[in-house]
Image (tube, rainbow, N blue to C red):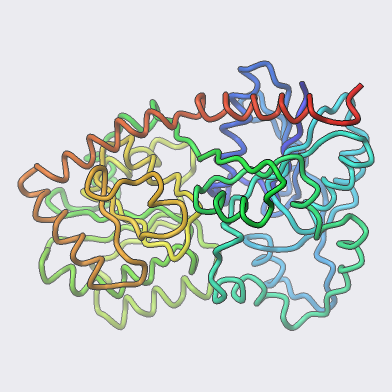
Length: 416
């Protein structure tokens, strides 16, 4: 079996959840005897061909079909949400020999290219939804298209040509990483195969780390109560909510320090965060690391350095970082949105709070902070989370994906 993976972008420099899913499942697909490659755009990476741990990545020239698009807007579109097109990718997909299936990790025009090629070659394709398209707040959708507002879009004809609006409709299966999205997708597409395939975690990797070493390296006091968030610096992840909550946190926990780790995908939002930190006078209490190399030891050690992990997103299809925090044995606080409540059991392996609700968050934080001093509830949450994380190993997740591939290929009406 030969399968091509098509994400919108794939760059080590700006790593995110989708890249993690594509890379980890591809790594295990090869162990299960599935030949797979990653075909993507050159967004955020100009390396045309790359070999990572034996996995072939091919990147193709792309463009945004707008007139009057500034370099700043292009960069922002590369980072998040840009509706790009690539003739060279289309050609590459047409010429790739012995292809059995295409796995899309994006929709829009790039997904349309995958759709068009699959239909031309009479092979099936599946699509994974990584971004929570059925529950994205209106404010974030507007943020995603902000970059192109001053430019004139001429690429709608390209989208029509490849059938970008029919990517989901014509797919052989729809894969949802979040349970809430699977429920919504099943309602909207009752005749379609809609699968819930959660994200996974490199359990063995995150199991052991050196938090003390990381604190020493980054100047975080040994006696600080460290609150960690690992996410993109982006409105979706809602880091500004934690900044605004921090004066209340300090009142009950004077030794608290907030650490934000993740790539900046929205420069305007990053500026707002820094301005708010200065306004509140908490510069000495907040530390921002704009991304750690995803495969570095630091990426593991940072979890082990924390006392509590917090994910305050305003929407979240799944949340791989919760699994990583669990594997490190850390208690988790997370907003009650998207797919999170379907795998985080409130009061058993973490606590859920209402998104953007300061009182709800502080109630949860107070419980964790007090219990961490007693080493009771916080330890129980972390221990239960660690046990659950093992179930979400990438090997288990990929095994389920292979079965789906086999079903779809066997059901292909054009199969010889």
